[in-house]
Amino acid sequence: MRVVRPTILAATSVLICLSASAAAAQVRVTTSKGDVMIYTQTNLAEHMILGDSVELEMAQLATSRTQNTAVRDFANMLITEHKGHLESLRKIAADDDVGRQASASDTAAAAAIRALASLREMPADSGFDRAFIREQIRFHQQEIIALKMFGGAAKDEELKDEVKRTLPLVERHLARAREVAATLGMSADTTATRDTTKPPTTTTTKPPR
Image 1 (cartoon, rainbow, N blue to C red):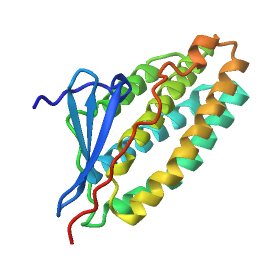
Image 2: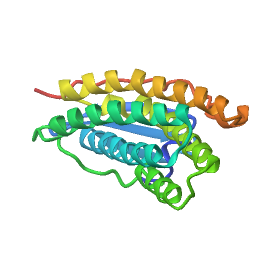
Image 3: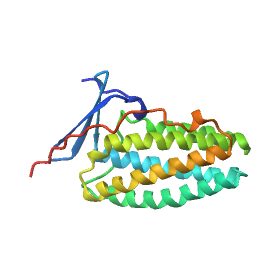
Image 4: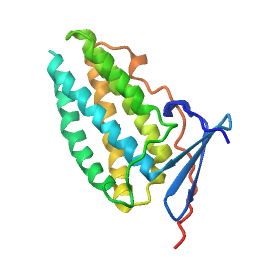
């Protein structure tokens, strides 16, 4: 079996099978090319925590750089909501039954960190505003796909509830990012969702007692 290292958005035609062991539930994602990615709830917790952490840094950077009211308001909303979400996730991950562990096939955090580094090098002008909003759209599009693909790995009840709460939050952030993009005169291509994959079909197997 070959385990690939694509970004999450690249896994288009997918089939998800949920299997469980005494240790943890797993989500097995098979792409149309036959490549496989496997996620456990420890991977899911780490993915969400890293995503929130980078989002917080990006938003804090935006509040110190932007001169645009709409961009600043959006960044402040991200700070407030991601901070609360991050605190909740860290408490859940501190439970020995959940924990945190990065998945080698998940490159989403690395991509977000590169984007953050690029934003830090930009001057405080309208170009920064557009780059920040463009990255917010990209990040939240990918996160919606990730939660739909890998959310089933959550076995812990608190983590399950957090996944359910997170999806509408991310969708709302994406919608707001697009609204801000429109005020900046960004093109429709920038704000459109490029991935048209329907939510994947899942099969769940209960863990053994």
